[in-house]
Length: 137
Image (cartoon, rainbow, N blue to C red; front, side, top):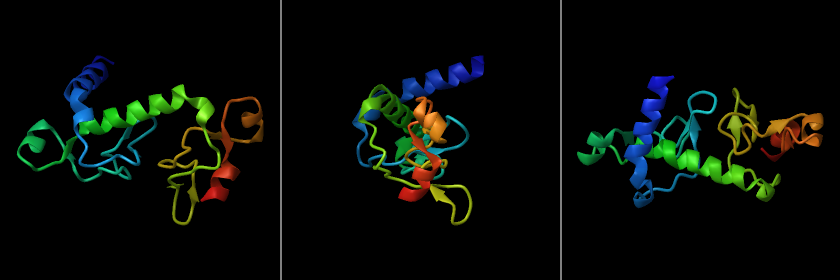
């Protein structure tokens, strides 16, 4: 637990200037496990362009992994604080769970983590159904 805390504190410290980086816009956060979203992870807008501070300074990377972490987590916080603005018709990215299995609810999809069955939607435990995620993709 301490290692996790130290690493995340360091990532946040390094990325305190994330707002000054804007040669690229992070349109999609990749993921590397549950709740591990980063613009640098596979499927993310910045995948393959990230490194540590030293790599950025010598031009071997455009952005740090810490910046990729911060931009995605800031976006997740922004979205969760504005839940009333959720538009179930807007799916900017379809995730996938195998060949030809695309769904806005799958990992990497715009609605990942917000989906469930009809009953979950009715009781407020989910925003949309997996069926809706399939339909829009």
